[in-house]
Image (cartoon, rainbow, N blue to C red):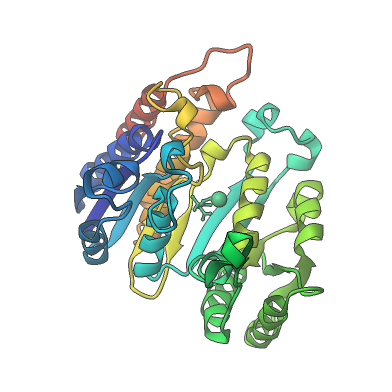
Length: 355
Ligand code: IPM
Ligand code: MG
């Protein structure tokens, strides 16, 4: 298969994890005789320094022409309080918006071999396997923002249209139908008008999916249930902000934020694949960051291209590295040896070559 990929390293540990993700991408490319070519583009702090823009137009154009983007991380403390539009995070938001990636998919799986690395009781972690569908380009993240009264008052509008809810709702129902046939809509419908609209639209779509059980949970209740009865969930659907918060919380179930991949898809037939861990500047340059979130994001990219054998082989390699404890410090048993970012990437690469 022929595909064009744009690779963006970004900030903090981005370049290190991307190096491993790229290694796996190229390794699969060779093993399965695909024709994936890639170019690199800049974003984040480096782009602010070079072009005074966290997401240069040129990077956006490259991404719009590609079939997929593999993204490392974004965020840098130096620019944290820069004006709106100039922060590294703003760059990522702009890219998501320009690529029309309205649906962010974050799978949550527990790995029994590393249960000890989760702060949650081990009996709760049996068979956790659900996926969060988070709306990604609307809601409070993108509503009008501003200050009034000489800056003493601030506001962020949370706005959703029926169409925005419908397009992700359909994808979430389809996912639930293909999985364990349960969809949980997480909102705050006891308070928010947007949540009420979400319920109306989702209920309407549910008529087309009689086999899928639809459940509604308020966000406060859901954040409790997600760590109390995580095996009760299959597909969780939520707006931009609630999905952001829930997915970090849910990462505790798998043991580390470093393990978590994500896919962002939309209407343009192109996707963006990124680990959810963020730039983690304290670990940058130390070769200790967990590359599995990035590598599993590459697996999600192959899934997106319907290359399931490739996806499964990567996932098998990751399981093997976890099972054999060829893992980074964040998920290693404190008394055991741990491996560097690069060593974990090398293990996965050689597993793929040999299987
Ligand atoms: C995420 C991140 C981003 C978000 C930040 C970096 C803007 O937390 O992808 O979850 O809030 O969407
Ligand atoms: Mg987040």
